[in-house]
Image (cartoon, rainbow, N blue to C red; front, side):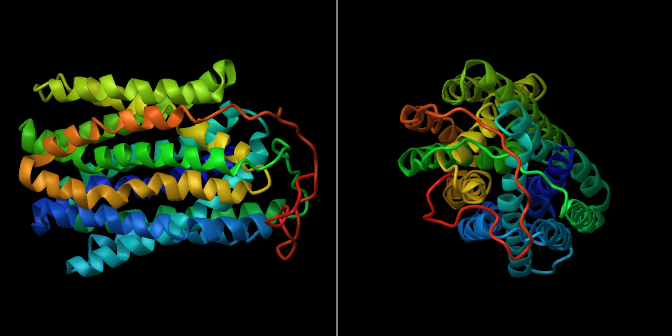
Length: 395
């Protein structure tokens, strides 16, 4: 879990880099709000669309090179985007970075599930790794861009390449000795998985919108400087780390579905409380609170999704970690239009109504009917199937 949590942190650092860099594209390159939202859309398209086919491949073959290559592409694409001379090139580079992120999540989620066994708390460590990456991204990127300008994104290419190499070496060392921890046995429940995916999309719209507009809200509506705007984003993402860990512990105590429902319900008052505060300093703790409550269901939904599709853990991870989480970016151009007419606050007001949809959708979720069970099995060679082929009966 340490290896996969660290790799997840590095990979999602580059997802956190994009919202941190968006205000600087607006301020230095004079991109419009719609163009700024398009940058979030580019990363979303690249990371969302390939998730399902990559997940299906990850369920049939080990593909040990996929996650390391994905991390490297994520770093190279986002790192070079700040050096790109024109908007179409920036868009293309962030699209490439999104593809790299898509290549990481399904195989990483599959292998993290095996390491976690049946524990939601253990799975929350892996999920929290991604939240840590999101948190560290703005904390490191904002000061660098403040001092050196948008071109400083290139400074963050080496960590991705290094982590890709480390992860590839890890796969090589464990190829012949790895022991798989099988997840829960049972039948696939595609109907409930579809309901869970809908919950993820609603939550993703809120999360992506916050990451895109919260800094601009502090700068343009509350009258803060770019540094304080970056601080607000950092606090929101830092709260996400705490919320992810809290959600895993709650799920092991009170159940996964109840934890998801509590997290969705808590988003509504937290968002409106932040919007009701007009003081740029007093609102900072509320940004932390919003990040915390909005991420309580994060790791739980990943685990629950894999429990709903026990024969296809890679596909489930690709959807819950990648496709559904990234799908919120598809709505960013609409929020960009709202922000163009009503400012960043208008976009956040729209987002503050979306938790109602997440609350309603989560009523369709049910606890899995089976108990976790662990059993050892050798890890297949690169050409062997990694698990049951699609359509195969569960053991």
